[in-house]
Amino acid sequence: MTRTVSELCPSSRILMGPGPSDVHPRVLRAMATPLVGHLDPEFLSLMNETQELLRYVFQTQNPLTFAVSGTGSAGMETCVVNLIEPGDRMIVCVNGVFGQRMVDVARRAGAEVTVLERPWGDVFPLDQIREALRQVRPKVLGIVHAETSTGACQPMDGLGALCHEFDTLLLVDTVTSLGGIPVEVDRWQADAVYSGTQKCLSAPPGLAPVTFSPRAVEAIHRRRHPVQSWYLDVSMVERYWGQERFYHHTAPITMIYSLYEALRLVQEEGLENRFARHQLHHRALKAGLTALGIRYAAVEGHQLPQLNAVWIPAGADDVATRKMLLERFGIEIGSGLGEFKGRVWRIGLMGYSCRANNVLLFLAALEQCLLAQGLRITEGAAVAAANRVYLESASSSSR
Image 1 (cartoon, rainbow, N blue to C red):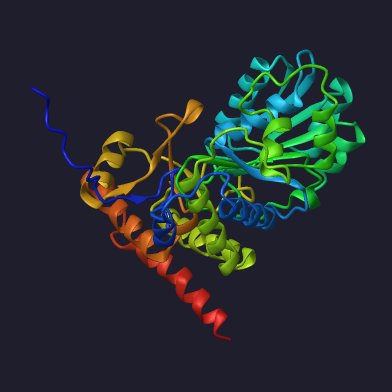
Image 2: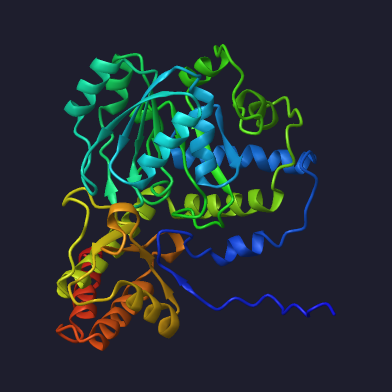
């Protein structure tokens, strides 16, 4: 007999991990919109509007700006395989898991990769990058703006100009930063930038926004060898997203609906307001965690507001705490990766998940979890510290 399969009914969760983030109700409603064909004139018009909204959040005028049909890792692979040909030299800056992943992708594309390293949680100074560029003279330099595994934010000022000084293309991972902190592609002079929909944009995973500078497009068109991936070959995909509308693949229509609505929400809030919201709730969370004696893994001054990687306090059990948060309170946070596995919790405040009620609920729940494990903390201290940040913010904004 065929087993009866139960109705889909996932438990209610508050997503405060490294992604996905909670999806805004308006985005969920957009995903229930009836389908049209992927070459329907109305859908083609929606693609145009989605591209304009992507240019807004990327802060760029790049004509070649679109969404790859795949997750953020597909965005990484799209940028690498289109810029790199077998034998090309590439420097990849590694200070966490996602720099390491870029190394793997680049080597699979045939690049001669030079790995530039910093300790996990640290960032790269321009002088270190300059010396590496001087020695290697690579075609591409790849770097992660927001390292999801460590919570570190890489400063970008001056990096694009430095790369161009050595005739190097600058490739930037903004998977965890786009829509949460400033991403300024044109001001950075970045040449290829990719992101994902499931982090600060608060849409489901499944699309990877990308943008290519005219300089990068020229390099792609000068290739001597075909791109190793037919599906991710920008020289073909751009014909579908461009004026020609040449059929390449069937676009994930419902996912484009979701991205369009998510980007409309970003535009309505305004980038500066959105960045300020992420900073406010980060400050409240950090105040609460500090009251519990919990420290951040990323270096001071370079900590992401939307991805808070913190050291697990002595006496707390990593797995037991995350299990208790999930089962008792429906809160998901992330574990550590790589060098930080078992040592770090990753607490996300991304997009729609970045709200005061989530911060206060999480801090109260974490206190209960730590007390249950016998840790000596002051009851109520975390929530009180967070509330002081909120009260001070409300007071200053009313002046």
